[in-house]
Image 1 (cartoon, rainbow, N blue to C red):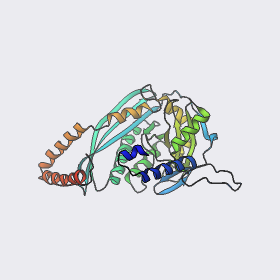
Image 2: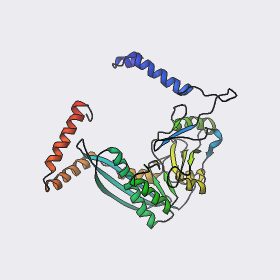
Image 3: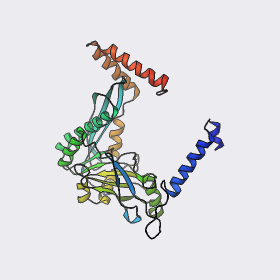
Image 4: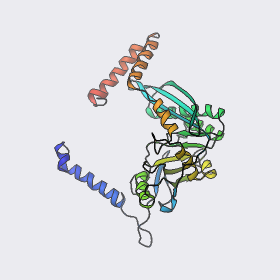
Length: 333
């Protein structure tokens, strides 16, 4: 405790934090739950989707499966879009998105689309998130028309606001192909004890399948939560890699085993990205918007807006918002 005190933290706060974390990871946030026979109940996955708290089946070592790479020459479509704020005027924000899509046949890249950019104005960032998902789904839809039956990879959960345009775009996509897979780099999945589900399964997997790639399925299966339903797994695609959440439509889970889907993904790794599909890594890297590119885009946008006589107003709005963020709230330093 003394170490954090030296940095100005109050000792009671630190002690309370340590006690809470210890309780969470040793005993569970809500304490140990017991069955009617008085034995400890098994924890279960907890997933929040569109405001609903859903519960998966209790965690069990019997749901683990060891996976092998599944060599294939399937077409694979991979899409990613990165967003940056061009101008933050407080009441509204102007966002830029850089989109990249690619097509692979097995591990051989066939085609690259983009990068190209989209721009839009939003009142809040939730709208921006829906728009970014829609942009990615539109790019995937265009390629699926040319490559029917392709696997489509996203680095996001396959969960969409039911009232959003992204949900409608996703519904159109799963009608064209049920081979849609989401592999987000981070996840908020939890166990009923409050722990991270990925971390919990990693430790359990190390106990029974140390040094082996595996998939845990199902974390959750629900055929009605959204168009196409939803099936969630957690997979460790390489012996030395962390586990990732894997989302698929429920219709895919009905036709392909989780081991097959994980084997298809595992085959798409290479030495530079163990544990993660290379097509997703490539489009992610190419879709990044570095600061110098963002600054140039801001300048070009202002030049376009100056023709309509509104560039000075946007600069004034953005300057006021930046002043509040930087000097009052201390954000962005």
